[in-house]
Each structure stands twice: as structure tokens, then as C-alpha cells.
Image (cartoon, rainbow, N blue to C red; front, side, top):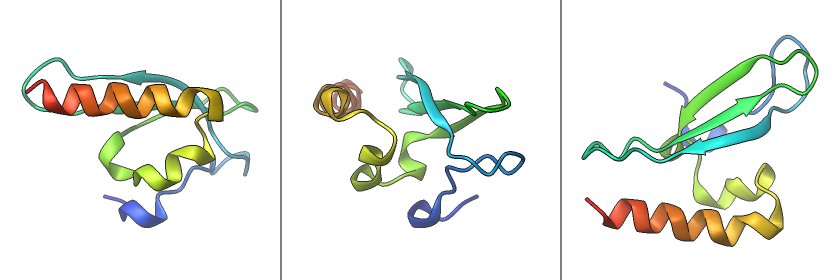
Length: 81
């Protein structure tokens, strides 16, 4: 498992940063909320638990106009269980 502070957002094949494709909030009691990434060059997919990337790094791949909404949705999802 990757260290949360050094989670690699780069496609190993293309050497470019993955782009956020989607976010999945776990509706079960597991709280396994997930980021889904796609490489803009080769189309490779990568998924990781939101907890693997510290919230202070989310601004690296979440557009600024969507970050507050994502943080609020994540906080609500964490409280719902």
C-alpha cells in the first residue's frame, strides 16, 4: 500500500498525471470512498481509496470550483455511518 503522503498520481507508462474521472462514495458501513482516475494519454484507469491521498493534496487533481462540494460530500458520507 502506498504511503498517503507520497501517493503517485502519475501514469507509469506515459509519465503524465492521471486526471480525476469520478468519485464513488461507499453506501455500506465500510466507508471505502474511492477516487477513480484516468490517464489522459493512454486511457488507463486507476482507483484508490480517498484515505490514501490526504485532503490537502486533493486540490492537485480536483478543480477548484468543485473542491468545496467534494469536501462537503465526503464529510456527509463519513457522518452517515
